[in-house]
Amino acid sequence: MSGNVPNVLIIDEDRILAESIAELLGRDGYVTRTAPNAEQALEILAAGRQGTTPVQWAMAIIDMSLPGMSGLELIKTLRREHPDIVSLAITGYPTVEAAVQVIRSGAMDYLSKPMVDDELRIAVEKGIRQQALLADNTSLRRQLDQRYGLDNIIGSDPRMRRVYDIIEAVAPSRTTVLMTGESGTGKSLVARATHRNSPRSDKPFVEISCGSIPETLLESELFGHVRGSFTGAHADKTGRFLAAHTGTIFLDEINCASPGMQLKLLRVLQERCFEPVGSNETIDVDVRVILATNQSLEELVAAGDFRQDLYYRINVVSIELPPLRERIGDIRVLAEHFLETKSGEAGRQITGFTPETMEALRRYLWPGNVRELENVVERAVVLSRSMQIGVGDLPAHVIDNTTGLLLPPHARPGSGGPWRVDAALPLRVALEEPERQIILAALEANDWNRQKTSDQLDINRTTLYKKIKQYALEQYGRAG
Image (cartoon, rainbow, N blue to C red; front, side):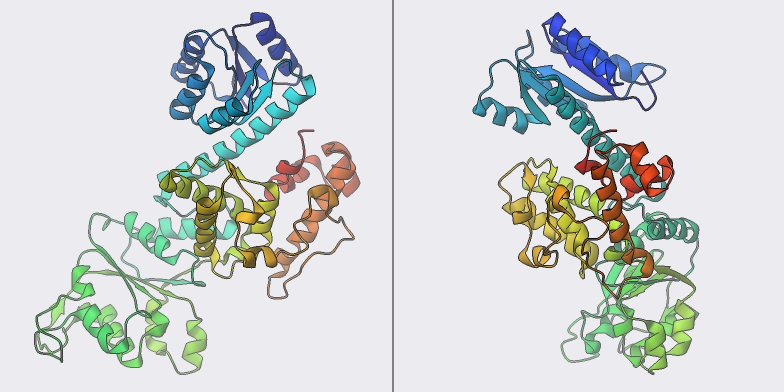
């Protein structure tokens, strides 16, 4: 039991029923195995982990009336010890209270005996899709953590992967790094990742926002001061540069620095030394400098508001962080990541987003970028009263900016329908939504038959599968 074929474990004391389910799913292409009780099921899962070729179980179909450990306890155990396995509960004694309890315990869905074949097939397909999405997200986070140590930087967009490559290349050096991008795109996280991947990772990392500190106090914050150097200086103070000695200092919103401060920064970068405010003592410092700006420094230089020599000095290696509206494909994985972390922090058990909610998140332009998405998800977690985040859990401005675009898939216009085009978007990004809706309409017109759809669109089947994954269209259809 290996490869990409989904493995399904069926746990039911009724051997005939278990084998009939296995036979049905086997005809649909699944690899199955049965167990008469929870204890034997756990032994099978443990053995699969220990073998020379580990078995990746995608789903467990669990009868609630098991001998020994109950089905409910098995679901809880799987959620704790095998979180990558999706559970589907079945019972011959259905009640609303039991269904709620099962879902809260971690089951994906709940079916009543006797089961209709098509009903079981649909539930299993839904579970396999959910498990695949969870596995993809977990794998992506694991890869990023192992290679880059980027705990909270998530995304597979080509421009983000380029960011990861630059971090990996520049981190071992002392080279100054300049990050550009709108507010909320994750510049602080990238700066920390660069530091963590450097030989200075066990040394201090000091962050300061030049735009949040009054100009009169910024010099003291950066370089420190001696007692009596100005009104209110009642004691000596160590500045941020000295605090970052042997480590890394991150200067955010460097575009806000005054001309006088820019000159002092230029000297520190060139000579690696400075004097505290009110002191004649020169202090040498060994510090790696990372800077960030949410404005174009080239335009500020042209306008005479930023020193040209400082710009050339800090623009050694440049990292551009794209706005979230230009990396639509990452919205789902980011939203799922924030949902997982925020639900854990709030002690909630929320399984995901409704398709309409994910549509709303994908269509919104996110002026506040990743930071705004995180805040929206946190708000939804706090306000939601169901197992999934619904459209009503989103702020009004997110919904208002997607007016007319929250129709259910079957009612959404196809190739001739209206879609919003933002003139500020690059052409490549602006064309994504029309292409997405054309592909979705063709899939629905062909009853999700991939071959017929690829023939109709005059693209090969592999390209169609890539587009389906890119635009997260699996949630609207069934396997074909």
